[in-house]
Image (cartoon, rainbow over all chains, first blue to last red; front, side):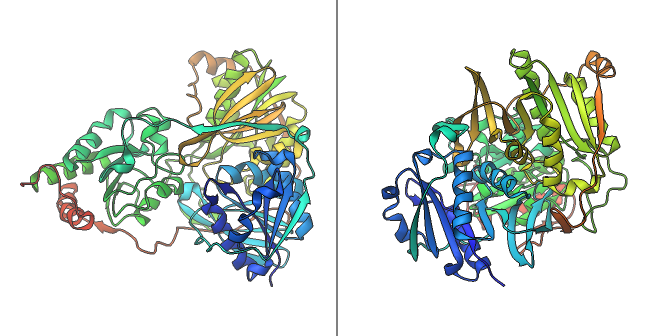
Length: 323
Length: 259
């Protein structure tokens, strides 16, 4: 059983985003081949997309064209996706599980009178709907859900599918946008860098990252001491920077820095997918956590299950004595 | 015009969760307000304090004991609560929840509706957006900053790779907030006392139709392909075993190493 699948293609400075190529792969598998995949690209003017046709491996590329799409907005993109859904007859819409998908997927799903299956890592058809494997409890558990009714909507976790190789779209259609700029309730003012700090996490050979499980900022000293003993720098999970224990620019994860050091030591970090995305390029990963089920142990080479407040000083001591 | 916060009661994050059937074992669990939603409540309170909202209203859908999270919102400073009473099992379908919340919100003269970006338990991350879609309100997710100017709301959205999108929304709008957008206040003793006199409107929701909406099938611990080698023993023993593995695996030398 296979049916047509629609994905949202997004542009980046260098062409099409990696997330889009992952969606195209997920869609191709679900649709039983590239022929069954439609990709929608909202554009102000179809001439912008010249060249992109050659690198978008879909059965058909739908360019939803109109001045409303001069810059992306939640409602503008949702309208373009719904329009392309009707034009293509797709029975499943795949969006990225990232800030774009978080904006667009619920608006699309609401219009279709359904919930989206979100944070999805596997998908299959049901007779009248889809089944999906998704992440729940902040990455601690994997959940299988069934979303009855077609068309279905899903957001796909980054890294769950390999990126599809660029290749040409088999056909291109230009669809006039159903919305004008005056119809939109949101407007993109600008996109800018959040501003980086003085520490270059991305260049460090050794990163020691602090997590919420440390309990409070008063316990960060032991993390700094371990970093000093290892000749590394201190980073943090989102929970730690949100709580103000460490500055935001030290945050490692999908919304912060992406690091790929030779040695990564995760101290009392549970390992939500958003954090793992930021450190999975590390050569050797050590995890210290009191919860043996913490997802970080699935991303680590070596782990110690125990109270970080006891284990970290012991590691610091062992490193100092080993020289 | 009012500021509304959508809140959810979730199992306490420090509980030991065990998968059981299609969900977790719910016996002997503590419950509290979803952490993300505390930031939504704070944003609503701040909007009123800045003079942009007449009242702040906290709304939840959940079982009878979910009234506790409304009380904690009222203790933080919200003016009133709306409790849509339904079985905990019915919270499995985000569309059912969003439909009920949207119906309630539509009668609240909402200017801005704040929701947490996601719930710590189910993690669907879409109820705020569904409410916006159902009501035709503007929507922005992953908000890390808010500014009110000329009757429009300017929202800073956190994108990937340390970038920020600045978007302007017409009102009414729904904003799904990231943690860290503000510093949620704690309830003062006075706030707790005052909360007892604040009104909470309660409504029973009709049960969803059988077979409609998102259904839970299974919940399990993730399979780990290449799982970590877990070092045993006392902290000192584990640490001693760790050091040579770090050296070999990472291929780095440490500052204290003899040169």
